Length: 155
View 1 (cartoon, helix red, strand yellow):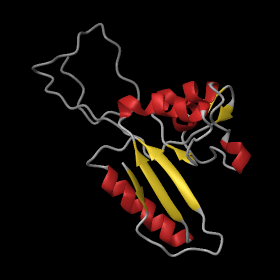
View 2 (view 1 turned 135 degrees about the vertical axis):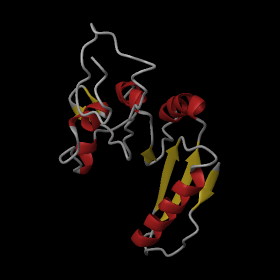
View 3 (view 1 turned 180 degrees about the horizontal axis):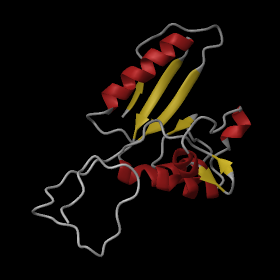
């Protein structure tokens, strides 16, 4: 789906920012609203292109070979290194962007050969709750690392 931002307040240089992402039909309208709000604040226009996740890599590689990549490309973490290795991405340091202030895991996910190519806009965390009486942990298994909100299993 390709769309233009609804907000038309423009600067004299008429900047249009092209964004390609993998937003689903349900989340695309939410992101379009965010894109539009940012565009209005900056006085630019945004064109968003939502590509199904399964087709994104093929689309990106085709765009890279034809030199038609968007200004902003949203990739899944595992794909950043593959696309960076192809030479299609430029390091964020070229734009004065560093990973300073971001958790190491976020920076590591967007880094290829020592250069930062992407920063995740969101990070998911998963909490696991279980009934220890129905699913006891074997005595030989190591204790989980990090924080846990679950009570320890019975001895």
